[in-house]
Length: 97
Image (cartoon, rainbow, N blue to C red; front, side, top):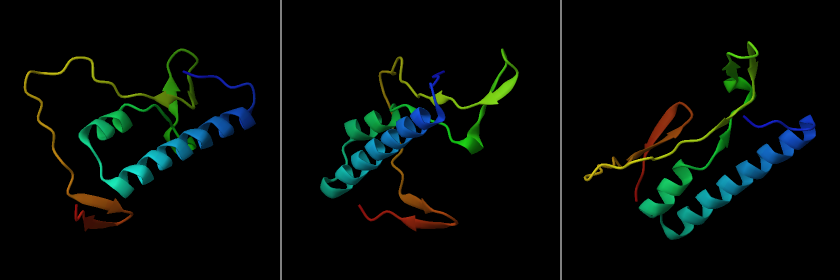
C-alpha cells in the first residue's frame, strides 16, 4: 500500500501513471504489439480508482490501493489467448489486426 503526503501528490502520481500507460498503448498501436509488450503492460502497477477502493482488514476502512499483477513461475507450456474483440463501453468491436 502506498501513502501520499497530500491528495495533490496522489492525484499527480495517478495522472503520471495513466499518461505512461496511455503512451505505451499509443506507441504499441502505432507499430504493432509484441507479446513481450503485452506482458510488460500486464504487470505494470495500477492505482485503483475511487470506485474500486480496497478494504483494509487492519484499519477496517476502504482506502486507495495499488494493484500489481505478477508472473512468479511459468509452466513448460504457456498458452496465451489472444483477445479478438475490444470493449467500447456497451459495444464490442472485432479487432482487425
